[in-house]
Image 1 (tube, one colour):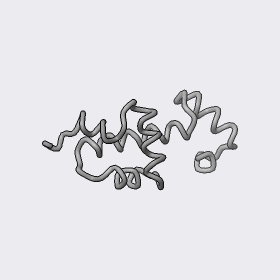
Image 2 (cartoon, rainbow, N blue to C red):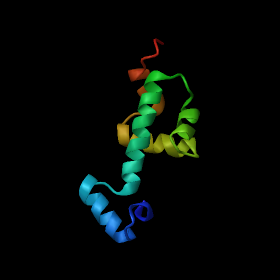
Image 3 (tube, rainbow, N blue to C red):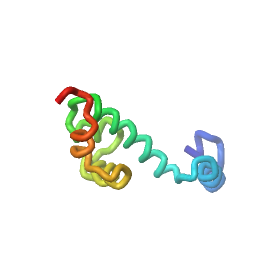
Length: 86
């Protein structure tokens, strides 16, 4: 990201954190989990398919990050918020 922004790594990290209050990895995790939430709510794709679609190579890692950020497992989240008419 720093290279794309045309900044030195330390400068980018400092400015990114000042703008978002998050580290780039934290921000990316929140974006990915947000997209996963929408997919869990509105599709019937498996948790594994959603994990891969939002950029996780390991579904187990996705599940851990998802639960840490939302307080729910992906399955529990889907059960609570699904809009698919189940």
